Length: 145
Image (cartoon, rainbow, N blue to C red):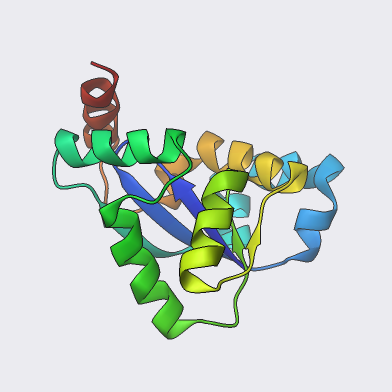
């Protein structure tokens, strides 16, 4: 299963190594106690960094409306070509419906996925490699303004 995670700096796609962990959400937080445990559970497959704050704002606005931004559409085209049989975990049901309609990709969005997203958010700096923490903070601040 793939996991789509949205950040202020871009879109991250992870490969969930053990799907059984997603069914056992009462203990899922234990998988995020240390960065080492988190990186065993999730492997970063792709990170699409936003070019600027304008692109980040457009993507955030589209997400709020349950739509797909241009950046997300490009990312999904790459993913669908490579791994059509995979399921995709997304945080928002509307976004999942839009992805399923456009790319015919099964999307999962439920309380278990929300717990997984909370874990990813807590260890985001360790899971997303190649993006300095300062840059992530700067993008979040710019987007907030």
